[in-house]
Length: 291
Image 1 (cartoon, rainbow, N blue to C red):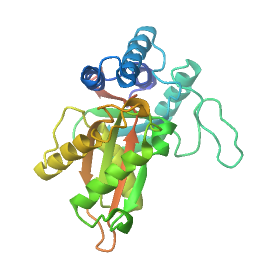
Image 2 (cartoon, rainbow, N blue to C red):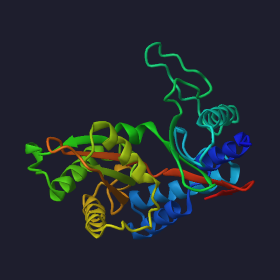
Image 3 (cartoon, helix red, strand yellow):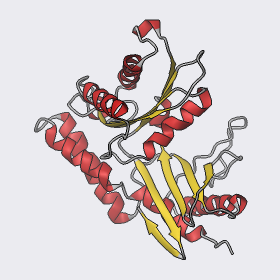
Image 4 (cartoon, helix red, strand yellow):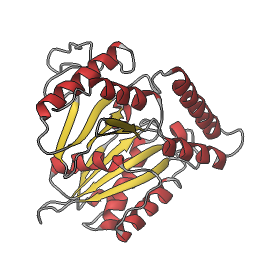
């Protein structure tokens, strides 16, 4: 019988909202040490890190904008996605009541806030795929409105950037997105980039790229080199934390490659703020692990 995991999913939401992942925190600490002593950039990162510690200690949201809950669920064969959807939505409602999430779900036509983060079939955002084993894996990203507003999509070629249909054109568009974001996306950011696909799949894949660890390496050496180059050059733009100038504009870049139609060449950039809230829950044989 499929178990009721509402309480376990509630804990996943709490952890995601209040406890920044270790790889992100470590990158922020290293970045702080690279900034000039006494600079606004160092001060901003120091304040961020103190906020991270306090949120973890007090189990309160890292950021007042607790973002859109985006769930990626890999489920065992035979499980009901309808039941899982109901449990996830119930956990989100309970998390809102406990103030782990801010009431964020607003009807776009009426302007009315549901008050509990419930919504239509797309809120919270749920993405299901059947796995080959007996594990249930639920990954959660909380993506704030500020960083979502500076996320974007380009169509190559782009004459204004002299960007052609190649990886150098991709690099130019991603750096242009970083320049346009400035500090509005709550830098330092993380860039999820999708190359190819159609408009919808490209946007979706750019967010999926954010599920990767900051300290991992792309298995494709060509994309690994592109990721490193974009991160390095973005950090030479002197935008810095919160737009205060400095050496840390981007914490990392993660790229996905999608097949496309010959007529289309899209590049989508999912900009994630420094409050890079993502967590994973693994359920197997009655045991739950959080990562």
